[in-house]
Length: 520
Ligand code: BGC
Image (cartoon, rainbow, N blue to C red):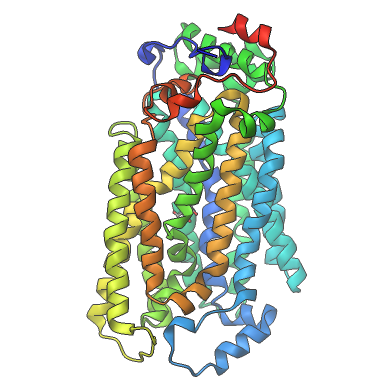
């Protein structure tokens, strides 16, 4: 087959530093507005843990859980909070997001990235209103499902939008802003929970849930002003508009090199009738498919959402009072935001691999430290009533280092890397696989964590540490560097890679042989 096949034709295939252009204000503003899409996801991650620990909320919607917690006199700290119904409330959103991401794929491809974002924001807004007004558990669930649909659409379209719109040498910086918005969403939600839990009359949870509408409104309004990406415009046959837009966002008249690459990518894409069939069956997409599954899988198996969803519960488990637990969750939230900024500065300078590898080693060290500390104090029985203050402080410090390691590696890069590696013809489908796998494992971790803590005890942290070792090795051997490579030229990283190159000399299934040969 040697070299036949458009997906491997490499387009211009030479020096990527040929695209002229500068960083324009227009593109900066556009990208910042689009990154707001991360807020709704983050707000949701941060809000549910706190709301489900508010007594009035539990009493109203989950009376049996509430009474069980009230009557519980056991001192086994590991099993105190294990309740499947409650975790289902948290995790149901991610199932809805999983399903929605597949519909989002078609919408994002057919109608553009911008419409998907707008739609995601609208549905999310309706979900937030229903949740805030909930008088019955069915309203809560319908609200959660709508929020999930919103998250599915936003997470599918925003990272793609950012990666296509950014100048290639700033792609890391801008894409990481999506993660920055996620972390800000989490932090704001934690702070709101902290204050709203204190509201007299016990209706603070309505504010916590309802204020999710604010980031949704921000997204809806910003997407009115956003233009679509040049890649998506070309894909939908609007070449002239795409040219004008490219000139505007790159701030130069000479955009031919970039425009021609996008055109070539679109022509390749037109030969592909069914992106789903192709991504699943063509060997030349195997590296991209493997990444779209393993990256979100590994991202969730770092165990980060144990901290994000259950930090207050976890801190209560190690002996903090209610208020101190919520405060400690706020502290980890601040570290999460600050450490993400490191990635904004360095993803395009040091490259993705350096951050992935350093972050992996850092997470590993501090996960083992947390396991050792908790193991030493709680043993396997978990029967502890009194803990020294220094102990709690050391655990919080270790957790902060662990969160920082995640926040400049797998957090942002878990969204950036998949969004930049797919060829145009499978980009939308590939991103849906990424979102769906991410949501599935977010759901799973949210759903089983409290049960696992009860059975695996401190060993749970070793369990996650094991996956951190695996993912760091995977990154070392199998993840090629993508910094500074234009998005429509990405196939070259697979062709040049010691392992993946063996998949790159096969044509795409279902493409017309003659057209393919003409392409090369
Ligand atoms: C992950 C979330 C996680 C968040 C923490 C994101 O990249 O996808 O699952 O809660 O980072 O900051």
